[in-house]
Image (cartoon, rainbow, N blue to C red; front, side):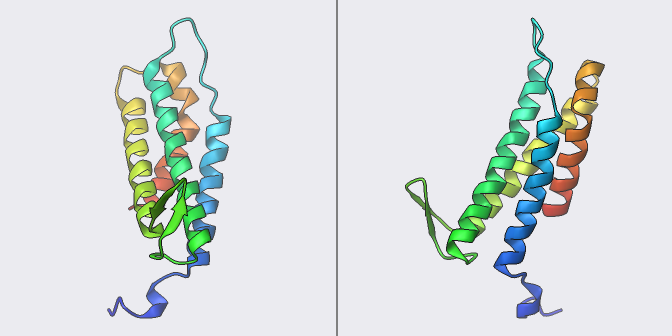
Length: 136
Protein backbone atom coordinates (compact mmCIF):
# COMPACT_ATOMS: atom_id res chain seq x y z
CA UNK A 1 0.00 0.00 0.00
CA UNK A 2 1.37 3.39 -0.97
CA UNK A 3 0.84 5.61 2.08
CA UNK A 4 2.04 8.69 0.26
CA UNK A 5 -0.99 9.04 -1.96
CA UNK A 6 -3.01 12.17 -1.24
CA UNK A 7 -6.15 10.05 -0.77
CA UNK A 8 -4.53 8.43 2.31
CA UNK A 9 -4.26 11.73 4.18
CA UNK A 10 -7.51 13.26 5.39
CA UNK A 11 -8.16 16.90 4.64
CA UNK A 12 -7.42 19.43 7.35
CA UNK A 13 -11.13 20.28 7.57
CA UNK A 14 -12.05 16.61 8.03
CA UNK A 15 -9.57 16.35 10.90
CA UNK A 16 -10.86 19.56 12.49
CA UNK A 17 -14.45 18.30 12.23
CA UNK A 18 -13.45 14.96 13.75
CA UNK A 19 -11.62 16.62 16.65
CA UNK A 20 -14.55 18.95 17.30
CA UNK A 21 -16.98 16.04 17.20
CA UNK A 22 -14.99 13.99 19.72
CA UNK A 23 -14.48 17.06 21.88
CA UNK A 24 -18.25 17.59 21.92
CA UNK A 25 -18.88 14.01 23.01
CA UNK A 26 -16.26 14.23 25.74
CA UNK A 27 -17.49 17.63 26.89
CA UNK A 28 -21.04 16.31 27.25
CA UNK A 29 -19.83 13.37 29.35
CA UNK A 30 -17.79 15.70 31.57
CA UNK A 31 -20.79 18.01 32.04
CA UNK A 32 -22.95 15.04 33.08
CA UNK A 33 -20.34 13.91 35.62
CA UNK A 34 -21.16 15.33 39.00
CA UNK A 35 -18.37 14.69 41.43
CA UNK A 36 -19.98 14.51 44.87
CA UNK A 37 -18.80 17.19 47.25
CA UNK A 38 -18.38 15.46 50.57
CA UNK A 39 -16.60 16.41 53.76
CA UNK A 40 -13.74 14.13 52.66
CA UNK A 41 -13.59 14.09 48.84
CA UNK A 42 -12.18 11.06 47.09
CA UNK A 43 -9.21 12.69 45.38
CA UNK A 44 -8.61 10.01 42.73
CA UNK A 45 -12.09 10.72 41.33
CA UNK A 46 -11.37 14.43 41.09
CA UNK A 47 -7.98 13.65 39.53
CA UNK A 48 -9.62 11.42 36.90
CA UNK A 49 -12.09 14.15 35.97
CA UNK A 50 -9.31 16.76 35.79
CA UNK A 51 -7.29 14.50 33.47
CA UNK A 52 -10.30 14.21 31.17
CA UNK A 53 -10.73 17.99 31.23
CA UNK A 54 -7.07 18.46 30.26
CA UNK A 55 -7.58 16.02 27.38
CA UNK A 56 -10.63 17.98 26.27
CA UNK A 57 -8.68 21.26 26.44
CA UNK A 58 -5.89 19.71 24.37
CA UNK A 59 -8.41 18.60 21.72
CA UNK A 60 -9.77 22.15 21.52
CA UNK A 61 -6.27 23.63 21.22
CA UNK A 62 -5.32 21.17 18.47
CA UNK A 63 -8.50 22.02 16.57
CA UNK A 64 -7.92 25.77 16.94
CA UNK A 65 -4.30 25.40 15.80
CA UNK A 66 -5.30 23.43 12.71
CA UNK A 67 -8.11 25.82 11.92
CA UNK A 68 -5.81 28.85 12.17
CA UNK A 69 -2.99 27.29 10.14
CA UNK A 70 -5.15 25.37 7.67
CA UNK A 71 -2.20 22.99 7.57
CA UNK A 72 -0.82 20.10 9.57
CA UNK A 73 2.72 21.47 9.59
CA UNK A 74 2.62 25.27 9.12
CA UNK A 75 3.46 26.84 12.51
CA UNK A 76 0.73 28.79 14.26
CA UNK A 77 1.06 31.31 17.10
CA UNK A 78 -0.97 30.34 20.18
CA UNK A 79 -0.61 32.04 23.55
CA UNK A 80 2.63 33.71 22.48
CA UNK A 81 4.32 30.51 21.30
CA UNK A 82 4.69 28.85 17.91
CA UNK A 83 3.38 25.32 17.42
CA UNK A 84 2.96 23.01 14.49
CA UNK A 85 -0.64 21.73 14.45
CA UNK A 86 0.59 18.15 14.07
CA UNK A 87 2.46 18.56 17.38
CA UNK A 88 -0.66 19.95 19.04
CA UNK A 89 -2.55 16.91 17.79
CA UNK A 90 0.13 14.58 19.15
CA UNK A 91 -0.05 16.32 22.54
CA UNK A 92 -3.84 16.00 22.56
CA UNK A 93 -3.64 12.30 21.79
CA UNK A 94 -1.08 11.81 24.56
CA UNK A 95 -3.34 13.68 27.01
CA UNK A 96 -6.32 11.54 26.02
CA UNK A 97 -4.31 8.34 26.33
CA UNK A 98 -3.12 9.35 29.78
CA UNK A 99 -6.62 10.35 30.87
CA UNK A 100 -8.04 7.04 29.68
CA UNK A 101 -5.41 5.17 31.71
CA UNK A 102 -6.14 7.22 34.85
CA UNK A 103 -9.88 6.65 34.50
CA UNK A 104 -9.39 2.92 33.84
CA UNK A 105 -7.27 2.57 37.01
CA UNK A 106 -9.93 4.53 38.89
CA UNK A 107 -12.72 2.27 37.70
CA UNK A 108 -10.90 -1.06 37.99
CA UNK A 109 -8.54 -0.42 40.89
CA UNK A 110 -10.66 -2.19 43.46
CA UNK A 111 -10.40 0.58 46.07
CA UNK A 112 -12.66 3.22 44.53
CA UNK A 113 -15.98 3.58 46.38
CA UNK A 114 -18.86 2.21 44.32
CA UNK A 115 -20.66 5.59 44.31
CA UNK A 116 -17.59 7.18 42.70
CA UNK A 117 -17.34 4.39 40.14
CA UNK A 118 -20.99 4.96 39.24
CA UNK A 119 -20.39 8.71 38.98
CA UNK A 120 -17.61 8.20 36.45
CA UNK A 121 -19.24 5.33 34.52
CA UNK A 122 -20.38 7.41 31.52
CA UNK A 123 -17.18 9.46 31.45
CA UNK A 124 -15.09 6.27 31.65
CA UNK A 125 -16.98 4.81 28.70
CA UNK A 126 -16.71 8.01 26.66
CA UNK A 127 -13.00 8.66 27.31
CA UNK A 128 -12.24 5.04 26.45
CA UNK A 129 -14.05 5.26 23.11
CA UNK A 130 -12.62 8.67 22.20
CA UNK A 131 -9.10 7.51 23.07
CA UNK A 132 -9.51 4.23 21.14
CA UNK A 133 -10.93 5.95 18.07
CA UNK A 134 -8.33 8.70 17.95
CA UNK A 135 -5.23 6.97 19.31
CA UNK A 136 -5.68 3.26 18.83
